[in-house]
Image 1: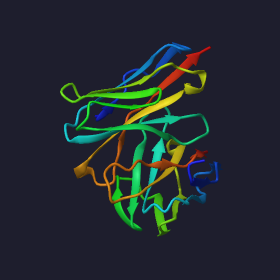
Image 2: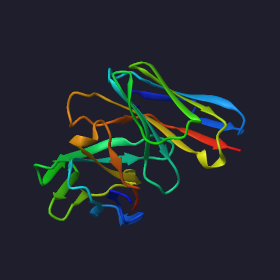
Image 3: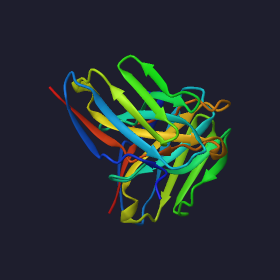
Length: 113
Length: 114
């Protein structure tokens, strides 16, 4: 059973509009969440993270929101740009997981010009 | 360029071959990871090395054998693989000592087993 879920395999958004990528998790012990972006033929690159003691973290065009009671987080990209087209992975870790991170299956974002 | 390199980038091998994947990080990190990514599935953790000791082995078949000779290098030795082992193999590194340190990934090796 997947502990980190990204229920939308793909998302298309018009350039300049907001992209919202969602992630749900089942393990209440997760205390740190990350978003990675992956282009074809490259490895995932870190984008933004949030600790469970916060409900929002912002970095430029990227904002991550965390709703602990719902075990839900979302990544907002505004305004979306064609260069944001990539696969986005949500990941989570817990203290009792040691060095391990649990990844979701990814959402492919296409930003249309 | 993330500071983590992987070679080869592509590998085609037969089921009776023996090959090795190599990962090198130039970031001064002290934890290294092997992940497997199959189509439309989450990244699956295979092995974790922290301070050159294997700290996790996620029920990986013995036909995959990791080696971490020092904190900068990580190998994955492959032998008698199956076609279902075809996937993208990703290496990552991370600085330990804090829970909020992210992983840095290499570009991956695309493996095809015939």
